[in-house]
Length: 225
Image (tube, rainbow, N blue to C red):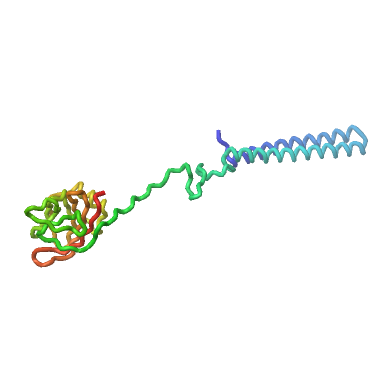
């Protein structure tokens, strides 16, 4: 059974009070007995001795009560230097026994972010800036524009991003994993996530139409991991 400081204080107070009352009663009775048994002078001296002894007992009871409170408070952890929740506080302000709070993973580093033109020429997004490919012989380019349809070329997948805010690398990667397709219809407000054939994640933010055969877009490249 665990005793806290409040319980120890109450127990010590009750014990001390009971012993003090007993000592006082014993002292008074002793003083009366001495008064009835001897001369007035002798009985007065004896009564003083009895009273002094009773006071000494009361003082000893008080000291014992304080000792009980102090010992119990140490057992309860009051003087152990621990924090209220049970673990010693370290120099950084955290308890050594407490689990560390989860930390947010750092944002993925952007390899390249600039404007470029989307058109029928395939683009290899595994380069910074994305390299121009060739539709007949290129086996590395990832996507190209065909009218108002953006097509996967040799890239793994692409998908329209539905949110208003720009996605992070992880946002695009998760969307590609669950909704990736081969082609998407685009306009001057479209947002596209693309995964290259080498695993890079790409975000293509279409800004405006550029003539009859292309769009101007802002392209963000992240690494493959």
